[in-house]
Length: 268
Ligand SMILES: [Fe+2]
Ligand SMILES: [Fe+2]
Image (cartoon, rainbow, N blue to C red; front, top):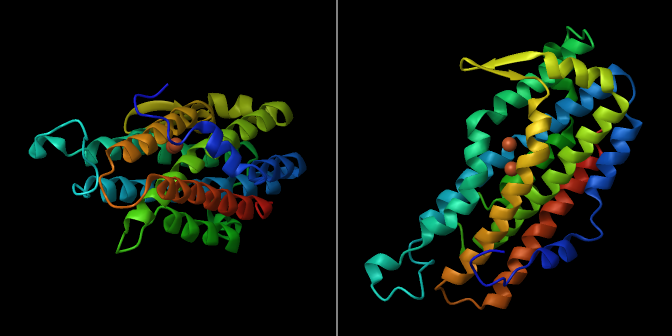
C-alpha cells in the first residue's frame, strides 16, 4: 500500500501488540460504568489521558526533522538535494494537523457536555479529584515513550516512532469502543451531546464531535504512522542495522501497549 519497502508491516505490529489487552480493559470499564459519577469520572480521565499525545508527537516530529544527518534519499546523488528528514517527520506531523486544529477544544466541549447532561454543576470544581495517580503516571510515560528527553539518540527516535504508531492504532480502538458503548448504553446522553453546540473560534461544533471524529481519524493517523516508519527505514543513512531498528520500533509499540493497559486498568 505504501510507497516504501514494507520492512515493518501491520502484521508485525499486531503481533507485537498481541496479548496487551488495554482496549479490553477499557471495554470492561465502559461496561461497568453506571451512574453519572462513574460516567463523568471515566470520561474526565480519558480526556486527560488523551492530552499528552499531541505534545509528545510534536517533539518527535521536530526531533526527526532536525536530524538532517540521519535521513537521506539513497537515489539522490546530489548531497544538497538528498535530505529527507522533513519527509519522515511529516508522517508524524500529519496526526498533529488534526490535533492542533480543534481537537483539544472538542475534548473539553465533550466533557462539558457530559457534565451538563447530568446537570452535574459542580464538575469544574471536582474534576481535579477525577485525575487519579494513574492518569498522571500515564502522562509521564507518554512523554517518555515519545522520546522527549534532552539528548535524543537514534534508537530513541525509532522506539518513539513505534510508540506513536501503537498510540494511533490503539487510540482508534479506544474511540470506537467508547462510541459503541455510549451509543448502546447511553443513547440519551449521545442524543443530548449531538445537539449541544460548542463554539470554537467562531465555528459551530457539537459536544459529541470529539468522539465521532476520533472514531474516524485515528485510523488515518495510524496509516501515516506506519508509512512514516518505513520511510524512516528507507531514508535512514546511519550506522545501525535495519533489523535492530525494527526491533526498536516494535519495542516502542509494546511500551505504549503497557502504558495504555496500566491506565485502562485504573480508569474506573
Ligand atoms: Fe486528536
Ligand atoms: Fe491521532
